[in-house]
Length: 110
Length: 114
Image (tube, rainbow over all chains, first blue to last red; front, side, top):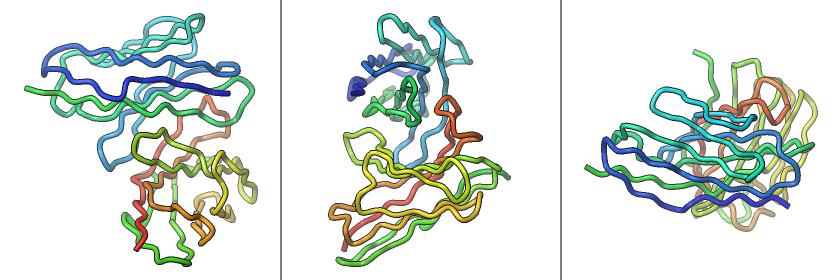
């Protein structure tokens, strides 16, 4: 079976750094996606990790540890517009369907 | 502008009625997907299509049907057999069927039952 865990909600302050964690237990693993979704809108692609390590893309970075079944999304210099849900999705081994976590609702406050 | 469009933005269904949600893409993507999103739950796959004239059931296909007669179009019908259809429906596409390919999402259709 597939199991993906993310915190339900997080709150952070404008200008700060926040780390959103995702742990997974899947039958095989071929990669992990992070998406951002504002309320009532479409998810938009943020990152895709296949190999262990940190990938940086502007204010957003994503980390993967395959041996630990763990990923995180790091958001720096938080802005109010970063208030959104962040979805973690795993590419299973040998499968043909993504498995999504329930998402982490991030609220950025002044 | 290339992208994925879904219509309508809001749709109301009466008891016993079938409704069809539209999804069109002009990205020349081979694969298309339908997901359902409910509060507090992750996106759940309803149906997907890897190529024209072919589609497969996802995890929650009961009460839904699809067709893929054209590469650009992948409409979803919510039938009267779907007893709890109220949800946010998202269509997505990817350049090829592999799960490692990034999926790009449409703006969604919110379905409400009268």
